[in-house]
Amino acid sequence: MAIIHTRIKLGARRTNMKRLEELINRLIIEHEDIDLIYLPAYPLTGPIVGYYPNQKVKNILKNFAERLNGSEIQQNQTFMIVSKWSHEFGIYIIAGPIVERAGPRLYLTTFMSNPLGELAGKYRKIAITRSEEENGLTPGKTVEVFNIKKKNAYVGVFTDEDLGYPEIFKALSFIGANVIIGSMLPYESRFFKMKSESGTSMLTLDLESINNFLSVRSKETDLPVILVGGAVEGVNNSGYVAFMPTITSEPEIGVVKEKIISYDDIDLPIIVEVDTSTKPVQYDEISKLILKNLCRRNELNEKESDEI
Image (cartoon, rainbow, N blue to C red; front, side):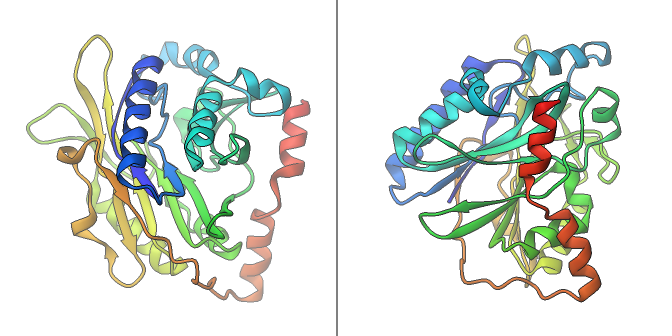
């Protein structure tokens, strides 16, 4: 598996698409045995909430919203580009979140395309922030594990604020994840303090707190937990406005400091070996009941929201 640690420019679909395509091409040439590529958050549009004036955010979210259901998926620019890459290179690709429209609702959704270019799963962010809720976004209802059938590997996914909720990670472990991966760029969080990098005006989050949460989640689930970061480029050639490192945490040792991918490593891929022999943590009966409720299959929930 490979993680792309790169920069995303706000609102610049063509620029971001071209850069990602070049990085994927280079990655495949250098590492022919890659089965899965994980893209950074908001891979084509860049993040929205917290990165534009408040009065414009709702309209920008609506303008960037794309559908991921039925025949309408053909109009989803992000999915069609990602599925093209999957089919061309014969790999799985996980991308997101993107802004998904389902009926009148908007979600922050991470999806996976398979080597045939088909939609192979999607996860709607559960732990939306106050700002996201105020701007019309809806929380998801269930966790999701993506099956990489080539290797019989199971990848649990999360999105930024989800990191604050142990139930989400325990549920991913409960339904058989071998590794848990999620994307995060600086944002207004209930758990992590926003700050400016010393010597620059770039926004970031308190890394000590992030590392502590990653270590705890990894130990609780007995699984590797990987946070995919990257840099955000502003509009009008304003340079970088935000940055998050890509961080790996292991159950036995916590955050692996030598595997932290920093600002100086932009555009360098991270290669990850996934141990598919890991066994899920055993939970008591009460915990099982709670986790089963969170792990209900998405089909009914998705059908309900798509038909509204």
